[in-house]
Length: 291
Image (cartoon, rainbow, N blue to C red):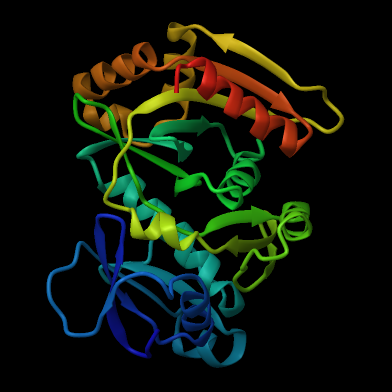
């Protein structure tokens, strides 16, 4: 990625990015090298930047801020966290601005043409499970945002680096030595953060939507035996409401779309301590669904 401004195509969104901060450029080069890039100008959906918080902070504290259209919605962070701040800011931008979709806090992966939603709050282990599935060849849509389009309820890919925390970073590295990680961000509010590069094939197929075939509520629990339990449509809908970014904004349309989603795809609760067990269970659920 070059110094200055350029346009980066991520899924269906064109991002104008100001990359004057060295730590951001390093992260983008490592994590977004396979994405379409343009320096010739043109249309864009969002104007994003990581900039020094102020002249004094630039030279003495080296703090930076995330900017959307020139406005800084978050407090400054240290410059070494620039790439992590960019990823968090991009999640916030999409979740708070893109209301043509119902957006849920959920990972999405696809296998055999069928989409699987992994809906859970932070700390459930969903990103670690998503990383494991992506490294096994499942197509990565997102580890954070389920974009659900129209009455047909198509899952829209938004493939980006997978955010991993603390012990999960070393776990994925041990299991998959070929995995490519971006810069480590130490001492964040969530501990140490690193991003796993999205598989090239997921980026290449970012225009291919998928139907939601399974809704899964994952929960990692140390030492727990595998537990797979069905969840009724009504309870699934209530859980998905809790994980929605823009359900209130969409009003009746959001309610109808979410209710249709809960009725159209079987929902399961998945508790596990072994990634191998969890991945095998998801394969079995897809097979039982007739895939």
